[in-house]
Length: 187
Image (cartoon, rainbow, N blue to C red; front, side, top):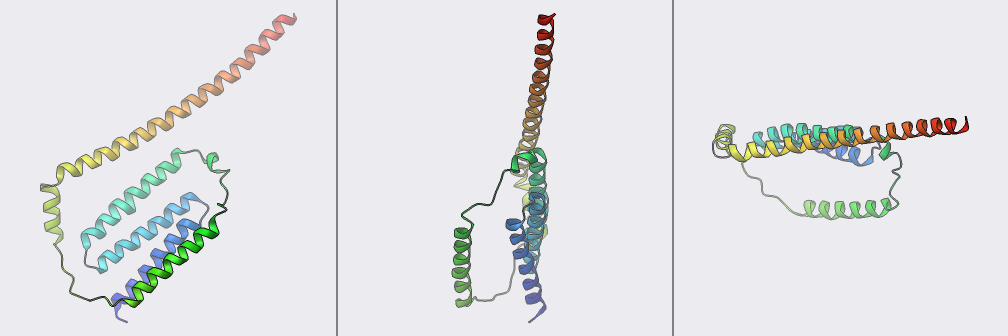
């Protein structure tokens, strides 16, 4: 085995381990960290394929931004909403389906001989020039859409917190008023 095959095997084990960690852990924050491990390992595969730009995009967008947005969503949701979640009773069916798909894909991969060829692609300089000259407007529009979505999620989460605290305040003041009225009626 040459060095690239050893590196590929190591990265494949990390990818699959991270993916298994995502679906088996009960802690959602730990699942986000396992997802980050898997996504970072995929960027290593891109480096082995001499696709440096895709590796960089994988780290920056998927490894960084998507994981951060996922963690923001976890922080903005209430943890007590997840306390009643139990195991799905259909886990056995899902396991059989996953193993069946794995077996079919494994058989196809092992029975087909892939042609090896020299890998070549555009350089990072060419991709950067194209991205920031011809595609700069769509790139900025996408970043603004993501920013507006994040701000909207924060506003919605804070608005529901304010409503709940006001409802709790009204409930406690109505109990006080009821107690005060009942005492005045007795005297």
